[in-house]
Length: 69
Length: 244
Image (cartoon, rainbow over the protein chains, first blue to last red):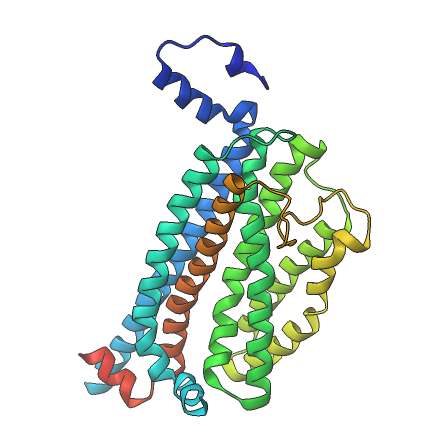
């Protein structure tokens, strides 16, 4: 598994370099899982922060409108 | 200078300047993130010992650094708010906690994933890993403490004390690889005179460090904004702001 890509003959250099890139020298599982978990955590951070901001704004807006009535 | 600090401490002023600040931090973050990833995943050569698995470093080191940095910010602003009762530092400490916990989580998970092919195990109870895990628990404890009190000021004070006690863990994490013989490798680029890493590998790492730092600033400001609105919901400027 580890050196699989170096032994495989690829057709077309572009395809080969992409495959090389994705296979990460046999460490694909480790590299890509580390990157995807990190991206999910960072992405959730931004989403939750923005959502909180909107929620707080809407809550205050609602309260002010209720007070006026 | 004092005037500037005073101005910065005012929630309204902080709220107003947070918009351009978070925008610029986000732009710098995006640029550094993309170029750092390209440099780290594509341009940098594979490590002669670790092969391509070393590329996890571009997430692991920045997030581990930021997990310490954010904790220091949290503890420092906690101390400032304990001493001077400044609202804005309460808010910064509170908004930092979930982001710091995320960085710690990323550092631990990427480290575990990196450890499997290199050390043959996801986890060992050595000094560096254990102290970083304690850091995660400190963050989670801080977050739990914040939601345990109805009064935000009491919560902030209790959180500040917890954060300050936990500061003792920071030098332990930092020096653990020197104090004890551990499985974790020594620092890669703390030796600024002669880093033990090649420039093609170092530059993407520095870009990722800037990207993580600006990511922290961006999310911190967004979180701080909603905290400020929450704190100040009865003041006239918030009412004016919300109605317009």
